[in-house]
Length: 122
Image (cartoon, rainbow, N blue to C red):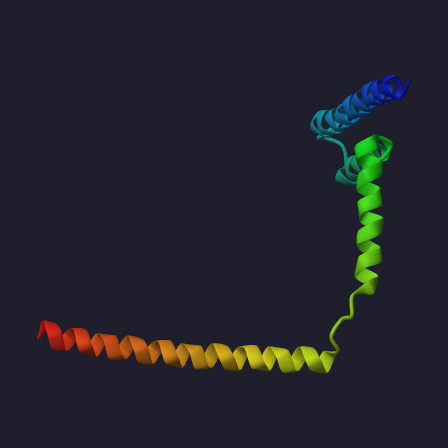
């Protein structure tokens, strides 16, 4: 029985995805067809059609799982302990200092090897 309901859901999902594609195609075609109309009206129509396409897409199984993923990601972001402004500034200064020191070390190595090669070549 569950296999039958999954195949029905899958066929309805396929129908919904075709509807999403059709709404997007209507938006693109309509924007081209009504190119002489005001940009404001065309933009409002595209926003409305995009909202409709997104609403239909969220009704599919993939849309439900994507929405669930977004909710779980927001919950995880709330759990993150973000650094303070002072910690961020200190870390930035440490990174800049390390980059500067490494640049000096690499410059020194490059100068040394250049000197050695010039001695060998003559």
